[in-house]
Image (cartoon, rainbow, N blue to C red; front, side, top):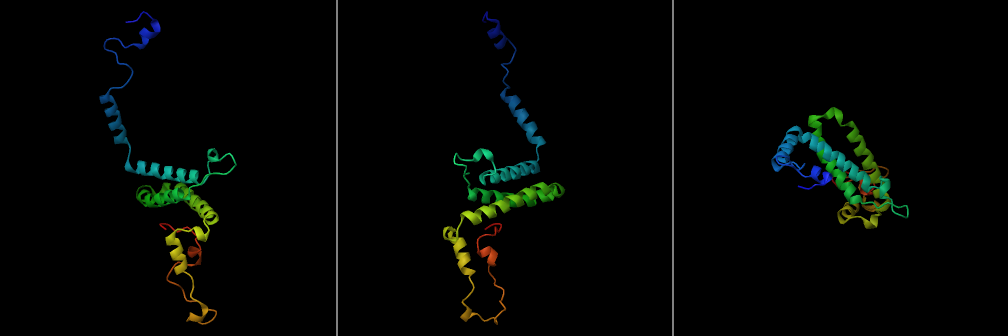
Length: 173
């Protein structure tokens, strides 16, 4: 034992612990926490985290601004976050449908911002191959081959003009 009073006070004496919980105490605390937390709580936490990540990746965070005043955006991560939230919301609707309005509102705002950014930063020449295929398939046939009378168009089975333009965000695509 040291004669220094500061060091002596910090050293554990016989029968005293060093201030660190034992492995058994940590395990008991962990098990108590798991017994309090529900799967709904974890899903809700995941949804909120995905919404926050999506907003951050769109540049809603002021800390993300680059020195030139521009923000680095990652639209693929935003899209993944939106898809993840949309996949988890039905599970939460089974448990707490009355408390989901703020989450739905946040998701809607994120989707609108994503659609706005995707329309600005993704010209048709830079579309992914599957988007270009859908766009090409949705082009109307030449007027000479059209069977519909003039002034009337037949509805198409494929995506409509808003979807084929690439400016409308469609879940899962």
